Length: 113
Length: 113
Image: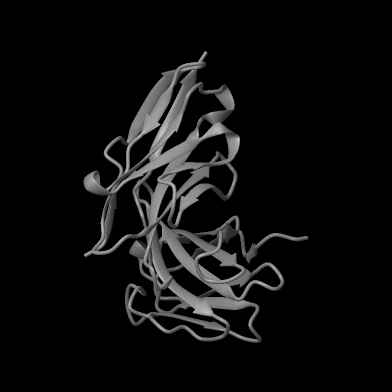
């Protein structure tokens, strides 16, 4: 069965530090992969997505993610975190048919000054 | 243009009552998705529509849940005989077509007492 695992429930980083949020998936074929962010009081917003091609994808707000097929991972990274990045981050997998989407349980990011 | 809207924003209902949740997608978006977000959980995919058709209803939690979409636009999610475990935030998203970026609405917070 398809699933998405975000092993870190909560992460705290200092402003200006680098960030990596982990995501592992289980899916029989090459999936479509997404990272969404949910800020307090805001709706979910797409940060970036991977469909095919270059395994390093760039997103909005300075985020990037790398698809590693051998590790079934799609980790999200940012070189320097800003206080406004504090939010909940969700990794998601979509089937190639586009008829199912699976979200992880999310990673809550706290940024300290 | 306007984003995805959902109504009501909050709904408190008594156990056993029926509720209807409404989603107005972005104009021109043919794909529409319903998700449920429970406290401490990720997003649970419920159902998607391509146009007015929902090819796969297996994500609906029980036969008390149903959804319809008319005119390729507005969708309603109906929960009959609500139970306390139905309490959650119900999110709707729309996209230009399947696998394009999903734009999420603000959600309906359902509380079953």
